[in-house]
Image (cartoon, rainbow, N blue to C red; front, side, top):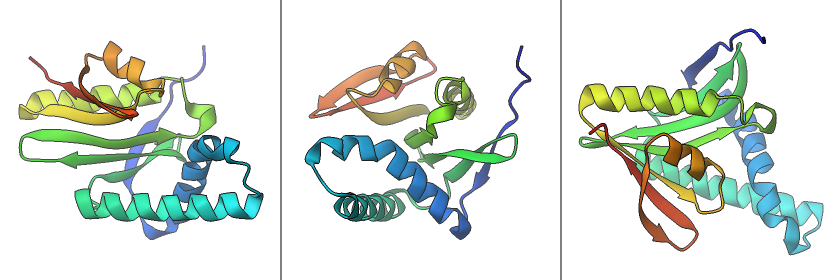
Length: 159
C-alpha cells in the first residue's frame, strides 16, 4: 500500500508563474493539436490563451482564492476558488498529468463541500462537457443546471 499523500494548499506567488504556464500548456496543448500549427505558432497561441485566462480570472474573481496544490511539498496543480456571499465558485482545479486519478481532486472538492456545508453555501462550477471530471462532480453530488455550448454549469448543495 503506498504511503498517504500529504496534500496541501498555499497561496500563489509571482515565482509560480512558470509552473502555472507549464501546467496550462500541458492541459491545453491537446486542444490545439489538430490545428496544424508549428511549434512557434502553438507556443504563441498558448501564451495568448494563458494570459487572457489569467487576466480574466483575476478581474472576475480576484487573487485571494488562487492556490498551488502541493503533494509531499511538490507543486502539482492549482486550485482557484471564489468565495461569494451566497455561493462558493470552483473557478478552476488542475493537476499535472501524473497526479490525475489518484484522489487529490476528489479530496480537495470534498474539503470544499465541507466548507460549504459549514457556511451554509452552495458550490457552482463550469466544466467542459467532454471533461472526465464532470463524471467525478456528478458522483460527488453536483447536478447539471445548464448546458451552454461546450460547458455544463453544475451546482452542489448540502441539502
